[in-house]
Length: 347
Image (cartoon, rainbow, N blue to C red):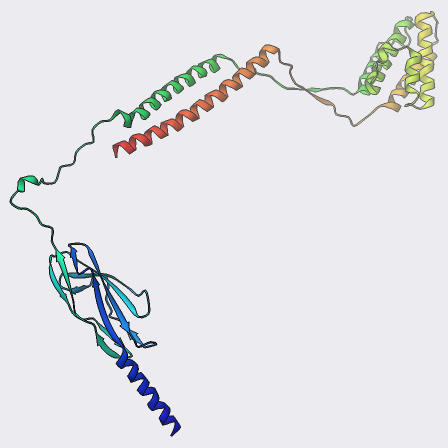
């Protein structure tokens, strides 16, 4: 019994809502020129929370012959906007729109739309002119002046670039070759000279001064290159003192004895025996072998030293190449711009 009462109440409330719901239509404007637009507003009054089915209208659909639907919108749940247009001048009666509310069809009021044509005075046809043929635009210097002056600038830049190229061509490049020289290490040079002393048999020569001069000179050159101080300009005692902190005492004692003997022979006319000469030669060889540095680079890269004129010539060539490259890039960019501008004027 309770369920029946609820069902009856629901049906009564639904029928009451349907009875209270109504649909109205308003058009604005009611009169328009050909091709203009008018808008129909459909509104549901009452029937809150009702299920609504609006008219299904599509764009370009003819509402009535001569009146075309442009689009439809639903700005609110109880409102529908229909945009219309027409291209024939006359008065159009618009049929009522049908809207379903909770399954019940409700019709709107009827509407009318007046489309007004443009009035043409056919009695004065000479006031109207037909379509014109395609005409060329008149020449205007302002349109072409930029392209003209830029074209002249491009020609000047190209002439300048060619002149610089001729200068670059006449300015011969300075060709410098890097040499790789194979050099002997200090101990190799010294041993080579000692071998030459042996080959010349200077040990047994009667000219002992020449022998000791050649032998001490070889040692001085070796010491200068090996230790990096000016041994050629130092006395024997100065050389020994300089080597005291670097060489071994025994080899330095033998070297000191060699220099003392050499000084006596060269300056005091001291005479030595052959075995003494041999012993000094052996002392020189031992000193070189004990102090030599091996595993040193034997190749030396020699870069040529350019004169001031050659350096100036190389700098000038670099500047010319840079200027020519910049001018070429600028000229190419301007040329592309001019072509684009001319294309825009001709199209």
